[in-house]
Length: 195
Image (tube, rainbow, N blue to C red; front, side, top):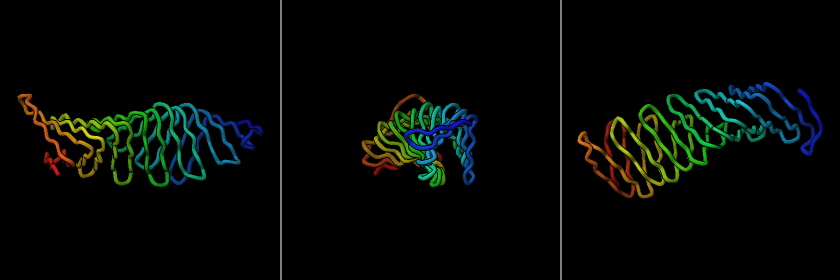
């Protein structure tokens, strides 16, 4: 550890960083702590572990005051069996909410999703995908397309709005299309509801 005085006041330069706060552990190869702002800037193999969620990325900035981590570079969020990936985002540690931006991809078992951005709510296990959302379910041979999809991982229920379209392929490869103002699709019960 070394330090100095910079534009942000006292600055400590850190190596092999480990921060533990209320059950959350944050690690990186190196970092910089700005005492006056309460900001910790982390670089290299950044890893955050918070109850059921693990997040990795190239760089992060942790605000002690806001209890928030800004994430940059190869962001990966893993919670239970789901994995979400994006170039950037942030994580609100106190509320267990992550927002990923810059093109998001997600996978859980044989289900995949892509979108412009997504929120993930850890405690409710809700994924809220926005912008050019495409969800594929290999087991059910379905594809759901919309501008907005809320997927409740516990109930296995996707609610799609913004010109939603459900494509279903039968065993012979024939495709059926379903359009509505609002589509609700349950991947467990295999029921789709058009509203």
